[in-house]
Every structure is written in structure tokens, then in C-alpha cells.
Amino acid sequence: MRTFILALLAARRARAEDDEWTLVQQRLREGTLTGGDVDLVRRRLEMVSDERGAVMALLGSYVARRKSTDANNLLKDPLMLRLRDEEAFYWLLDLAESEHARCVRGKSLATPNCADFRQHVPTLVIEIITMAKAFLLAGHTLEDATPEGAILATMVDARDKDIMALIHRAVKFAPDAAAEAKAEQTEGLALFLLAQSADDVEYKEEDGEIKFTRKHAFTEDDEAAWELLSARLLGEKELSVLSEEDVDLVYKRLREVVDDRGIVLTALMGHIAKQMGHDLKGIFNDAFVRSLAVPASFEGLLGMALHEHETCVRKQRTATPNCESFREHVSNLVVLIVQQAKSWVMRGVSAHEDPGLKAMEKMVDAHRKKIKALVDRAVEFARDTRDTDRVSSSKESLTKNAGLVDILLFRTRDSKVEYFKGEGGAVTHGGYTYKVTPRKKRKRKKKKGPRQDL
Image (cartoon, rainbow, N blue to C red; front, top):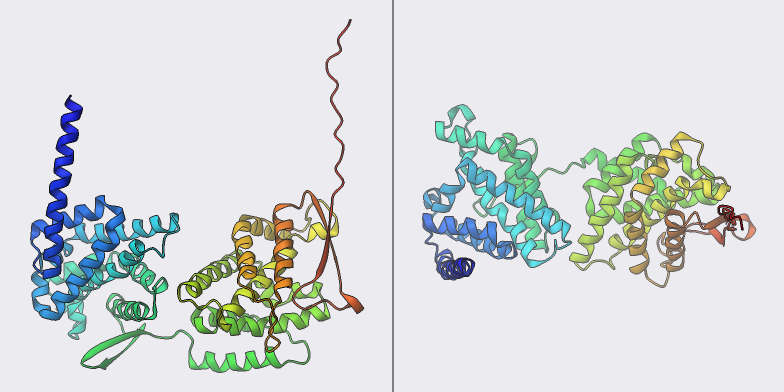
């Protein structure tokens, strides 16, 4: 009986909160929150995870509306006053981190609930940062700030990395170009305010507002160097050797100029294809291919490939030359590393003797599921015809690569892989030819049971 009464009371309390929440939503839309409303908003965010996106969207619109009506009144707003408290502000940052982790675990980053929360929470955070660093915008230093302002600035600076990670996620996973532009603007302002320096950002005045943008890490000197390197890679008639500086420039270009990733790998694979036609085994001495034997570089490339694919899918650009070229060529690069890591299979021995190859094999095995997903994506989104205007892999070649990866990473104990060159001794473009035959199964001797005397 007692349990039944408690259940009734809980149900009544839930209905009362739902009715009260309906009123709070109305006041959010009208821009008239109270301190009690803020308490209910926090409870709603904590307890109802499936509504966090919708709640944060309401809060983001509420703050934007209040700011456009009268920016000075925002300083006295119950929501902003609460978030200026250290415990409440850190709670919001922790909630944003845990919510992102939950969305990653559930593979639901693109769902409206996760997307709305991720894109709108920076609106609240940047307002608190702006209040904390108002002295910077006025051209002063921390010494000129009021005691309250100095405390607020210290509170924000203590979590600067978490704040930048939160805002950068809004840029990285923006659902469309408009959201991405807005998030980049917020990121630029946050960089300026948290760094207490203009070294990391550029800012200019447009339409009466100061626009902040992140300074491009790829400088004019880098651009000139890349033009020379890409011309060398695409136009070389004879084999050339990549230097360590060339490799660093390739990585920097891939990292900083996202719209050029397909072009970068097209140029690089043109260079590698010439190497493969000349000496298949010698390709593993190439500076860029060799750099992928370093776990940090290899893992970075896998992460970049996944993010690039998710971005291309989200923006419906999977068939564009940039997305297509990057997807295909990164698959070919990874297959080269897998082939080297599992070279003991083609040699017909039981394992590597070289410590470096053992380390490479361990690295590849640790990421075999990611590798398989990467090569499978290349097959799934490949075109059936080959574009002769650029260095491109046919769907047949990509399918063969996926099959090879499946065998080398998942079925090497049951299969024997033999590699050989194509007709006339030349290696076919985009890879190699291989044959898989079942290994002979060794018969196990049956253990004799204990002797039984009749």
C-alpha cells in the first residue's frame, strides 16, 4: 500500500512539473524568465536527456532575443546571473561534455536532439565569456577589471580548454553552412577573449559589428611552397624523393585546408603510383608512406578520414571530387600500410622478426575495425566507371583492396596470400594482384584415452 501511495505522489509531482514546464516554455518564448524558472530548466536538462536539444534551442533563442532587445538587460537576466556562478557555469560545461560523449556512444551525433544541444550551448557560454572579458573588448587589461570582473575572468580561464573544445565541436559537426559560419564566428571571439591576445584571430568591423575569424595556419609562404610541391608531384616525369619538410607540408595542408584534402591526396597518389610502377617494395621507403608507420600519424589519418566522410555525408557532398578523391586515396594509402604490416603472410613465415614491423602490425591490428570500415566506405561510395582525368581507383580495385584487408586482418590463419605482378611485369594501377588459397589444415592426433583392462 505504501509503495502504491508513493507511486501516486510521484505521478502527481511529474504531472505538476509538466504543467509548470509548459508555462516556463511559454515564458522562454516571451523572454520573461524568473529565478524559479531557471531552477526548473536545470532540472529538465538533468533529468530528461531526450529533450536536452529542444531545451537548449529554447535557451539559445531566449538569450539571442534578450540580447537583440536590450543587451544591457542581459547582465541582469536570471539565467545569465545564475550562469555567472562558478558551480552553475562548470555544471553547464560538464553537462555539454557528458552529452557529447553520450551522443558519440549512441552514434547519434546527427540526430536533432544531439545537434540542437551542441549548436546552441555555445550561445550561452560565449555570453558568459564576453561578460568575464569585457575589459578586453574595452581595450583594457585584467588589472583594470573590477574585483567581480577579475573573479569571473579567473573562473572562465580555469576551464578555457573545455570551453574551446565545446565551441569547436559546434564547428566540426555543424549541420549546414549557416550553422558552421555562426559557430566559426563564436570560435573566433572565444579564441580572442580566452587567449587575451589578437595573435590567434583576425577581426574586422562589418555592418556595425566586429567579426572574428580564426587566422589561417597555412601562411602565404606555405601556399607558395605547396604550389611548387604539388606541381612536382603531379608533373614529375621521373621519380623524385620526398623530404621530411615535404611530408610536414603535406600533413599541414591536409590538416588546415579541408576543402583541398582530395586534391592533396590526388597529387600524393600520383607520386606513389609512379613509385609502385617502378618498384613495388621500394614504395615503403617513401618518406610519406614511412611516416604512416608512426602510430600518431596513422591514427590521425584514420580519424581525419572518418570525420571527412561524416562531413561529406552531412553536407550531401559524397559525390564531389574533393570527397570522392580523399575517400578513395586514403583507402589505398591505408591498404599499403596494412600490406607492409602483414608482409610476413606473403613471405610465408609465421611472424615478423623485425621489431619495427612487429610494432606496425600491432598498430594495424589495434585499429582493424576502423580500417575495415574505411575501405568498405570506399567501395560503397565508389563509382562504377573510372575517371581518366584524375588519378582514381576503379570500383573493382577498391573492392579487391577491401577483400585483401578482410583477409589480412581477420583471416590470415586460414588463408595463404600470394602476390604477383601484372602482365609484362608491370604492377596494375591502384594496387597489385593477389591470390588466396586455403591453408592445409593439420590433422590433430587424437589423444588416446586411458587404457581399460577387460
